[in-house]
Length: 138
Image 1: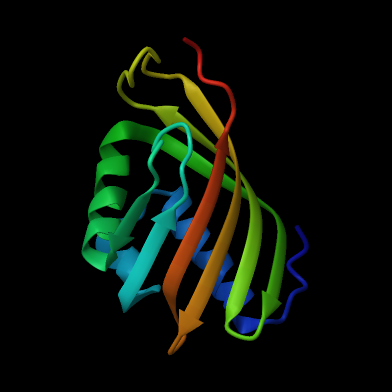
Image 2: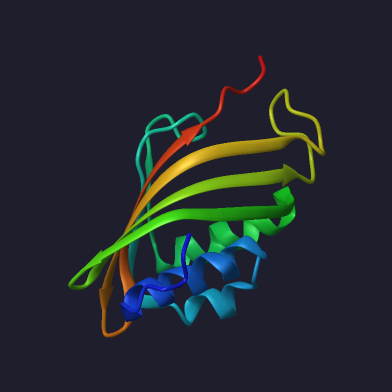
């Protein structure tokens, strides 16, 4: 993706995803997130019923990811901004640190993601993820 976008929220969204990708500690991620934020993951292979988290639960989930993954990568393919909203097209990969279901430690999971971020006061107040995981081995 080109870094030529000048929309300030695109810049913040990219920096946020870079921090998440390197498994930054919750205190660092909190700098990007509004105190009233809500993160919604629509139903997918890992969360069949979907999940909605407030700031505290979002930060706790990021801490959990640090114990489940040895590393992850977010490749942003496209970013579009309008007003206080940013839409990202992302390819995610994460390497398991521990077995997960039938998947062994070291397995690389992949997902194609559409993420919609809404900003208030310069911070992310809402994030909706549509995560399409590549088929998981049985």
